[in-house]
Length: 157
Image (cartoon, rainbow, N blue to C red; front, side, top):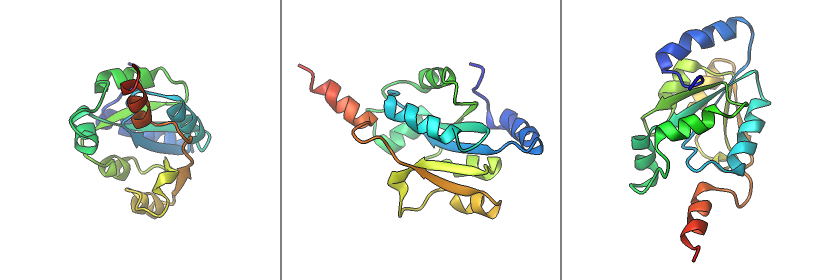
């Protein structure tokens, strides 16, 4: 996988890109059972800057958030699938429940979350805004979610 980096290896790359005046966009998620909603979200995120970094929840992180039946696909497979997407420039795993540590070290120019965060606290907003960046909420595709996909599969007779 050419886009998957440890945070320690990724940070000098980010610094180099920032010196070149590249706009760094960060988003994160589980991306379990990749679907059209994910693709459209990531495409929109990429249009907001030059470099799109995706923080990917590890398996243990997904289990903490979604329960023991998740993820459906293991982290290495999810990373390999995402690695094939042209709009993503870099992927970095995180094992915590939130990407706060990643955001505080990367300090992206733009932090992207789904519009379901409207009115909620976006983790890392303070770090991004303190460093002159902004948070952008992207509308999700109605009826397109991993949970809905799992339920549809379960109901197939």
